[in-house]
Amino acid sequence: MADYVMNREGKYGYLFVQDMSGAPESRRSPEALAGYRQFGARQLWIDGNCVPGSFQMNTCFWTKANKELMLQHPDAPVVTGHSHSYPEILGFVGTNPDDPLDLGGEVEFWVEDEPHIITRSTMVFLPPNMKHCPMFILNVKDEKTPILHFSVVMNELYGYEQGGEKVDHV
Image (cartoon, rainbow, N blue to C red; front, side, top):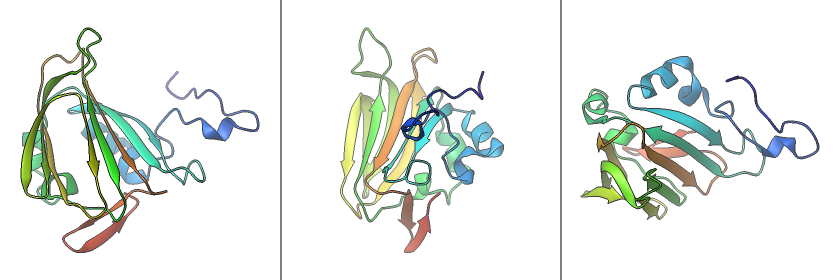
């Protein structure tokens, strides 16, 4: 059933995205998805490549800590930090229906050079050109109530600047 995608028919079927097929190869390749499964599961990706006119958004579940794993990739933008020429909203959402504001874990997230520990469901607005990250999952209390993470960039494609170098659509 994993290959079954609903709502592709009709005049507006192209507006429904229910998988990772629209993500750039660097995010949806079997190797990338397998690496991500060490601490979570990517779910959905939408951008202007898969739905013309859309801005970019992606979602995932985090089920395990990832800091040690991420530190093995010191050049990764989520470790060293990066910025975008457009605004971004990041979400960190607990999935316990009895206490949805409890994150169910801890996330370390840096804005500029300022660290923040997030333990409650949170959305973060990042103005254009604001450096952010590292971002590490420090712990998840229960894999049955993972942390839902999403990012939304107000641009048709995702890209970033890291160390003065521009990287498009990754």
